[in-house]
Amino acid sequence: MSSVFSVAWEFLTTSAFRNVLVALALATFVFPELVFLPFILRNRPRPTGLGTTPDAYEARLESIVARIRRQLPGAAPAARDVLEAELAAATARLADMDDAYEDYRSRLVEAARALDRLGLGVPPGKAALARGETGPAVSLFKCVAERRRESAQNRAVAAYQLGRLADARLDFATAAHSFVHATRLAPGEAAYRRAATAILRATGRRAEADAL
Image 1 (cartoon, rainbow, N blue to C red):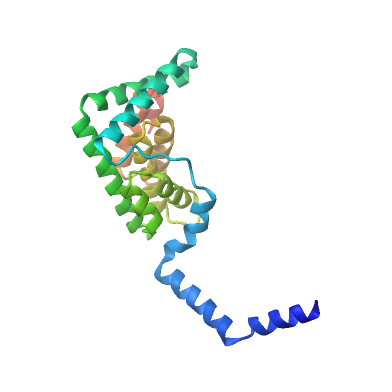
Image 2: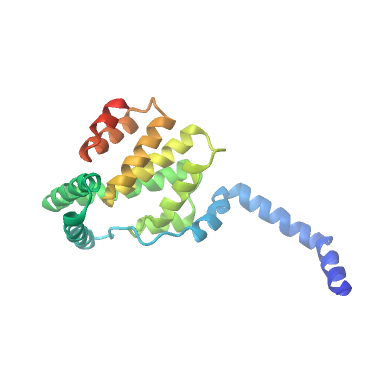
């Protein structure tokens, strides 16, 4: 056993090991998003994309409509308000597929730019967005939004993007929470407040919307 420790100690005190540490430090400095890779791998969510083609997007919207219609009959009043808002939005998007699809694609582009702005342009996240898969980007934005050491501005940007992506996939409960969080972190940002107010009113939470 002592020989094992001796070999390990010799390695730890070699210049090769020090070079490895220096290389890792430099890599982290040049590519700070690498720090977040373990978070992505541990918290990889289920697929949340709506597809990269108009047909895939339309099929996903239709499946969301079918799911909501199954859930509505047994939903509690508060949940019913959210489901009805999601159903109305999904139906409207299906009725105007061209504009809806363009809006969805623009949100993915906006999310990729936000990752760059936050210093999180990690290849897995951006590549997934290019495929229409938002899961890795959501993990990165969550990490920033929940980190107390981050500036309020960065946390607000991340929370707003979480809301935008949640709204795109018709998860209005998550969208409302994220937009409200962004507004509280950056109360002077009119876009955040408008998004929060709109989603709260659409889901029947008018008193909360008026209080923002």
